[in-house]
Image (tube, rainbow, N blue to C red; front, side):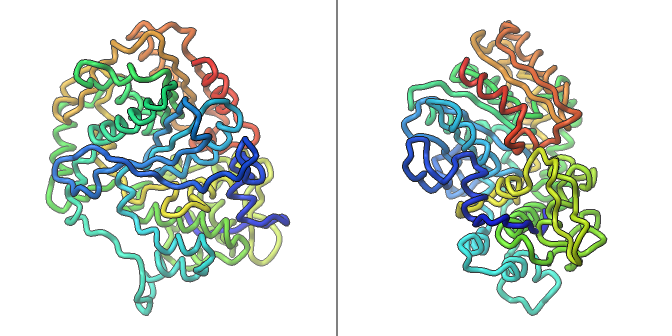
Length: 469
């Protein structure tokens, strides 16, 4: 979530980071022709009450052969955007025949100002210009052209962007994928796992959402076994609806939109200007617990902020095993990626979205209501809190017995993710043979399942899982 750097090792950053680390060497498709430029495709979303029509949309980044009939739809977690899954998606389609991967871009990302990031990715803006536009102006009043935050009062409608909106938007994505005529598997990371359970157990006019699916994939996240109380749900709604309350979640104690801005700008600078001294480190803008005590490059700052061994506990959900740590030589310290599960260049690619335009791997504005609603999903069992929150995730005992489920536990969810998957299967009498359960809590940080490369236990079980659904 900061500005950082890394050595080029003789490779052009545009090629090495955008293509090779994505899993399709040389930028070629599996058929040997140039891969089309990736970007977000927007489609009609749910018409949420009170929401302007221009925001009633849902996007996807489609990775893989357009003629592939099977689709793995991936739902990002808290404060994560569609670009997060792109390197993993490229790897998946390179190893599975007949599959596409669609990464979901939720509606709230339409609020982001990606203009200067777009210029930076095109090499039309410098690192200083990038930093000044999004952050530098906070300390330097002489900077007149800069990013404008969105007043909470102008987006009060986003207080209604909870689980119902997320599920209904996702329903449009699933229905579009179904039209290809193949199998559809729905997966989610972190809070995205709660959305997966909500969707699978949602009552669509007497039909469970899972009836349209061949499988579910949980990536260190899922539903909780015990719902919040009616009193808690009522209090959450009242608090959110209070005048002056923001619609947005604070991530790791960092208010919206700055957690997203830190990560988007920091990851982009780490990729495209890795060896320059970090502007963020000396700015006084970044949280003190992610700032090293020695001068660092852009990549050194980025790694220090998000590496499992150096990142603060408040950012546990943003961490990965990125290597040894800061380099020990030089007056300005870079990053030593030795021993990384997730290569730091790949991690920065996930969050910057490079070289794609108008998209990154974070959500600058994440709805508080969506977080609140996850507490009532309860593996698809009706409960009083769902009535308060307006949820319909009540078909948890009526999923198709043919459904396959893959649950992977990492640092945050661990064995609880596997336990929730077992409960969901048992409720609907899904055979144990349909379950793939893997726990790596002690060795995989929260973001390693999506980022680890070229050795990745999550990926090693995902490919055979997709082949058998």
